[in-house]
Image (tube, rainbow, N blue to C red; front, side, top):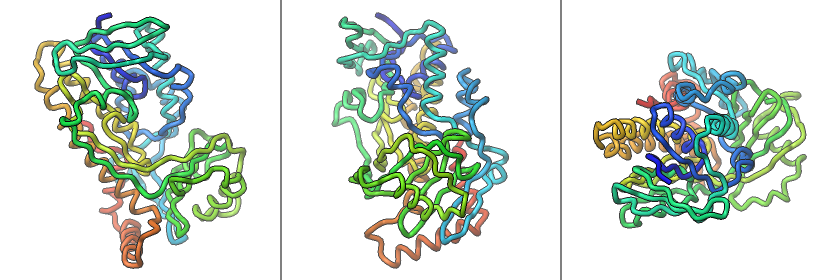
Length: 390
């Protein structure tokens, strides 16, 4: 097989890259290790920055997003028993965020690619990349029981944190920045009316809590817990009781519907530099992970893709490799700013077991300042709706 761009991974980064390349007349083949049902069913992020919505719209994959997505113009911070509203749109010149599940965006992009008859292979096995430092890299894999090879001009590693692409780069050529947080999130999906029309971030003496949603009838709620948390110890009754306490829910504010899913999400920050080795380019979770507090994972992947598409388009129309050479530095400049914001949100809102009285007072002072300062609220809002993509 021969293509211009071999894409490893059919998550948001890989599928969006394939679609945007197709719009520009650039051929690609997408290889995915998991079955289609698994890819479309895995629950991930659900909040899109303004720029991410604009990008998906430009890519022609946002029709259902605009019909079903929930546009939010603000958010709530709760601490010390008081609710503080942050007006995102007023503080950012009209920008907003949209709630639309990552798996829904993935379903949309898969359907569009398959309807167009473009190559997308699920359940590929033994995927490996070769000659990535050359001008003719290859991908070998097995699909439907047959060994195959894909000759490419470029390989895009969009296969996530546990994928094969990043480890294919020689360790001596990568620098890893990693931080594991001493807590996790216990998350539930519940068939219940969302607690609010906008997200509620709560800091409580017992730990952080977040109330968000997937639709007008399905809530997504989180509680800070330990990384080793035993879900068997968390009955539905205990979860709802703890959510009421930490969220400071008034009577009738938190509807307790059937819990459809429970899980524990680890909290870490991770960056691999550089994001390019020869003709292999990393995008999305293959290159970076952020704690979910700032809701930036999928948004960072979309931002990477915008930069990569611009670079590949220039290369394939004969304008050289300057933008490809700049890809990693361009992406990392924004990635580190987003890492800073995600770290800031995380340290501000979570309870640290080893925190002393001084640190607790500093954190309280910072929250009080945020609640009273338009400048500080503007900083939060600008980062939350998304830093500039270009």
